[in-house]
Length: 112
Image 1 (spheres, helix red, strand yellow):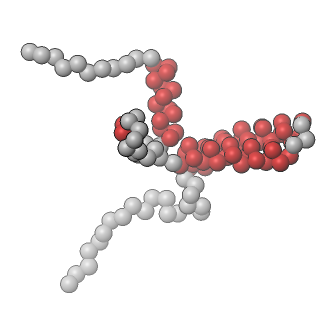
Image 2 (cartoon, rainbow, N blue to C red; image 1 turned 180 degrees about the vertical axis):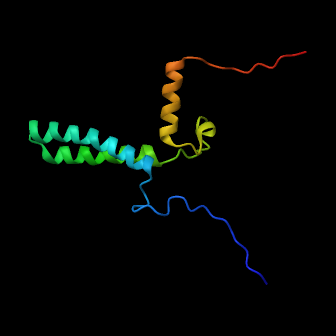
Image 3 (cartoon, one colour; image 1 turned 45 degrees about the horizontal axis):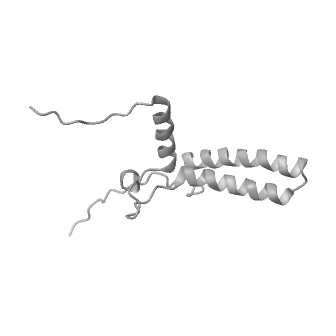
């Protein structure tokens, strides 16, 4: 009996923190930056340090979720049929491109 090579996807195995890809680290940092701004507003100006830290953590998690999570297919919701498996950041980028472009392409079957 001989041995066979089974290919596997090894991208990302060299990361220090496996949960952070480049995209999720960038979006976590962007969310954390918004959280830091809110932290300084609440902690330094209003004296509410705990509220500032909580907002920092919430915005960092929202940034992480945008960069990491994918949309699941939920059978009860019709719109998830078309976007199931796509990343949340990809959906947001497509939405803004659609809003800027304002063009709707439709397919009409031509009869001969």
